[in-house]
Amino acid sequence: MYQALYRKYRPSTFDDVISQPHVTTALTNQIISGKTAHAYLFTGSRGTGKTTCARIFAKAINCEHPVNGNPCNECSICRDADNFALSDIIEIDAASNNTVNDARELREGTIYTPERCKYKIYIIDEVHMLSKEAFNALLKIIEEPPPHIKFIMATTELHKVLPTILSRCQRFDFRRIRTEDIAERLLQVADKEGISLEADAAALIAKAADGGMRDALSILDRCIAFSDNITGQIVSEAAGIADREYVFKLCEAIADKNPSEALGIISRLYDCSKDMTLLCEELITQFRNIMIAASAPDRTDVIFCLPSELETIKEIAEKMPLADIMADIDALGKCSERMSRSLSKRIDLEMCVIAMCSGIHTSDNSSVNKSSVENDRGDSRTVEILKGRVAALEQRISEGYQPQNTRSRQSAGGAITSAERVTDTSSLNRSKLKAFSGWDSAVKELSRVYPSISSTLTCSRAFESDQSLFVETDNRFFIQLLRQEDNKNKLLETVSNVSGNKYTKVFTKCVPNLSELIDTHVETASVDADSSAPTQTPLDVLLKKAEEAGVPVETSAT
Image (tube, rainbow, N blue to C red; front, side, top):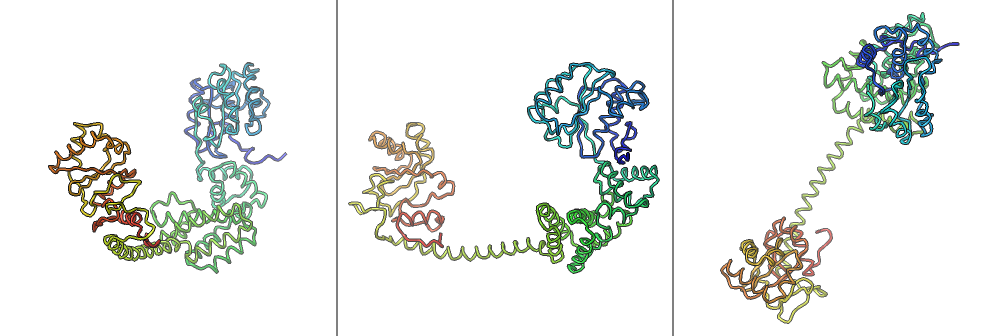
């Protein structure tokens, strides 16, 4: 029966494994020295050799005649292992055996000693598919297995493996296989199969495999079904990869801002049954190469292309600004994401390419910036209008504007009071009210002689008018303290001694958000609406005063 190439040419020794010397060297040294661990975790992307190395390792530590850490592949144990007829090497697919009962069954099987081998080895593939309960059921046996048991786990999604499992294993990270190594191995396989494979075609397959040897051999298998003489054109047709010439012509059309030519190329590729999603991904790859050629022309070693294509990439890079190239990559990335859930991938790609040719996607940011500048200019005009309205508002407040239905009420002494906020203001002359500059010193002195009072003035400020003192604080308990005549006299006596002025009356007001007002340096603001407004009062304080005075303010002004 025909056997797929990736199975037929699977490495049988560590020496056959390519691009993973950091893993194979460590494992062979452990086998030679006899210092192997009880649990291993192999991680990496698909097709990089995780399961292959697990099988080679399982054969090597049980081989009757190992050779420099490698299995001999000739003894009965090696032959039976290759034929999956060895009961002491157990492979488990965690994707279909992921329940806690499966884990318990595995754990119970570890009590039995090996039948023929030195070690009984469990190879658990796709271990990240185990449930949390299954992981927990295996914790103890993985941490302290019997001396004849070893675990080798493989996964492509390391982040899904519990940290408690990771800490119990020796971890080996498998890297993506280098494109050059894949191409070289493909040429070797083609030679053994009696197939003619061009070097450019091998390189094209290697790039399409994206670091996976299994994918590369699968593509080669499909190409062999087309022809025994494999060229780049055959690879493009067999693997559904767009012809390289068409891809570069499409990139040139985008660089030349020629949507007609670009649409014609897409149409021809679509008629040839090319995968539009794959074409989009290839465009992303080529524009990435163009970006590197434009920004770092000396780093040709990181450009993924055939040697004959390098000049074409450089020519396209010279036509395009770097900003446009990066914007095109971003647009293609969004298009690729949208195509995964779209009903018409061709339309999505055509829309994206037209936008790239027309520069629509690159002008979006400039449009936003232009709009932002216009908004800033509009804000400047708005500020000028507000300044005029604020000046008028100050004038109306200073003139003592008294509307009907005001929330303040006229007291017997003629002063405007707020029954909710100010206590005993009948004799307060607010027209002469000014900030009390020595208040901080007074509070400091109060903290020394009367700490019970000063503790309520942590956040406070004061104003004076003739022989009256007005105190604002955010602590309501201060008002209760001053209801006692003794406390009021202590406060007035201390403040009078500090300032040198004689005060006979004290008025209080509780302001819950006083700290915010103090932080914005609004110490000179007057207490109520009928006092004169300072010339440099912040807008929010003016609007507050207008609200208390009942002055109507247009919504646009706020």
